Image (cartoon, rainbow, N blue to C red; front, side):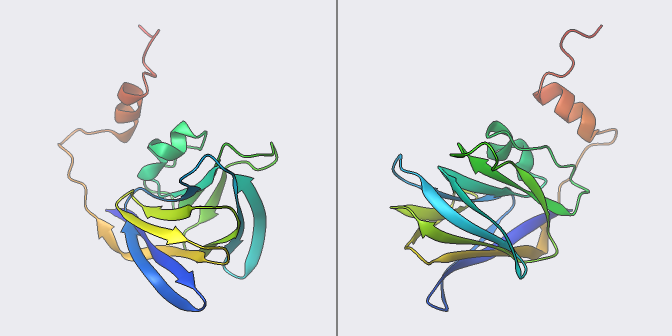
Length: 166
């Protein structure tokens, strides 16, 4: 069973969009302009991130868009999410693994034509001050694997970790 992310976009205290994702939630601009997001976990302010966007990926999604943006690979048994800035405008904004037992908030502080995407299926246009709220879903995806299947063997094959070995 794989954890999922659920949440939505909030504007002026009202939810204007609801979504669910197995892989990731992405906030970015549809133009090539930078956005700034205020990131909070629970009641704690984490940072303001100025970048082309931010990816919050589940362990399942950590090997997709988040990995290509420089994020870590999370084992499916890990209770956490990878938050990965996309083309950050400062080198100090680095990927970080966040706990998935607290709400994560991304508030749009600056930027134009921003949107929130839940597994690239749900799309919500965002205005300044809008907040994406995410939490671990009570729903889980069930993966079926053949006998003898290995998570690490899958990584070795897909990421070509076996190259050069005899």
